[in-house]
Image (cartoon, rainbow, N blue to C red):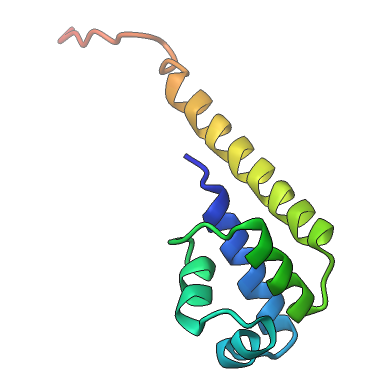
Length: 102
């Protein structure tokens, strides 16, 4: 199962790190507790639209860019899961094999 909150956390963490920001700096700039941001980044908490807007503003990245990247990563993960499920459903070549001692 693909969890949006996990993908969102990964994108936010990557953006924070790309900018060279610490959790403490982001917490101060966004006025959100460090612990809560950490939980969002680890996919353990859902970010409200207000919190997400504050994080994006502090990261100086448009919300639409973050959501687009999350959408892209969700699509890739869904495709991977569908492909894996399809491989699991493909029957083995040759069907049932009966051994003989000829």
